Length: 239
Image 1 (cartoon, rainbow, N blue to C red):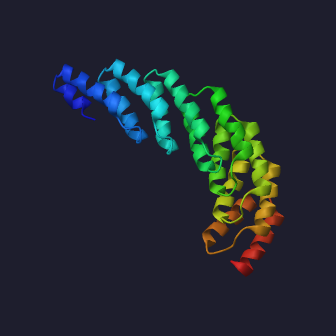
Image 2 (cartoon, rainbow, N blue to C red):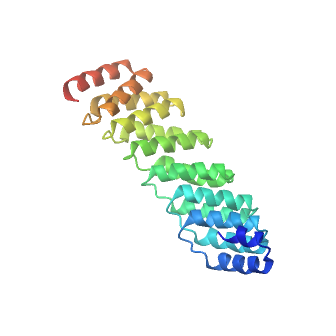
Image 3 (cartoon, helix red, strand yellow):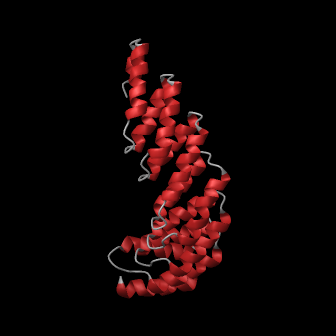
């Protein structure tokens, strides 16, 4: 942004003109740029433009990247634009696809870090627990951790129970991470046992030998010794 340099040069009218243009014309496609621009407007003391920019970005900013949405949420909160932050969070929650648990997990972390009200966090946590796709096991693991850290223990247990019986077994490394998070973060011991048994019998043992080794360690760490033996026997003959 040119705003800091223009301000240092002492051109207050130039700052106002530039700030007006930035607030009214900035593209809504690059959410990270909007965060940077909002910060620059705040630094330049352009309060009216900050308000205008906050309203526009809350209503129109791209929601494709949850980490960029997180940055913008933080900037809106820092600018005191609580209503704009609420609008953006509501849009992001509505936009979130339950087919992408990684996105939902990152967004949940962003809402929590941005100080979103408990109602907004719950509005995302509840459907995430019951509807999130279980195909990407590493993404499910990240979502499970996000639920725990958001204080949504009930939702975390629901997700852990679903994952234990339905999660894909195609990625042994992802299953390993999911198993560790189920025990470490959620304390879902029974779900972890069920998942360990399924992994031992059905996890893919393809070309990712490191993933298989990681899964074997996670199964053993979960205390599922019988499952560990079954997986070890499979690995010895099939991996």
